[in-house]
Image (tube, rainbow, N blue to C red; front, side, top):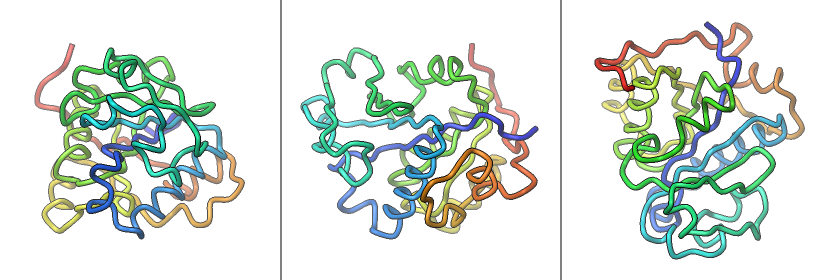
Length: 208
């Protein structure tokens, strides 16, 4: 099955982590994916954790402004704490994660279902923390999962071995200089001409 309705999901991009956990080459790769998804009109979700999110009033206090759709975007921490999604751009929202995973205790699954999404492309800080948890959750929720390894910090041999064991597809170095793209060219850059097969392994348990 090809991924017809992808969503870019960034995990743990809050500035309290980024200085030490998101090196410049990874941030630049992530910025490329964000530009490409925005240009193609495809949805983006930023899953954020930590107390900084709840205290902030401007999105630039939480996320590197270079990764935002608008540098002066507002962020309402108390609103996010109540479980609401906050819109940052035309097809871009932020949510607050009370734990490691972006699905647990949030409205992410219902948001993805409403979008008709079938695949989540995961990027962000510290593979062993948030991104790994999100990949597991996505499989349990019956979404195909793709790890954008050039846009995830903390990738190493054991991390790649674990994604392979879980049946997670790895993609990277395909965004190029995104510029103005449409959905077809974005699919080609990330998935290649044959598209992406649903590679996620069957989860050990089914979530209701």
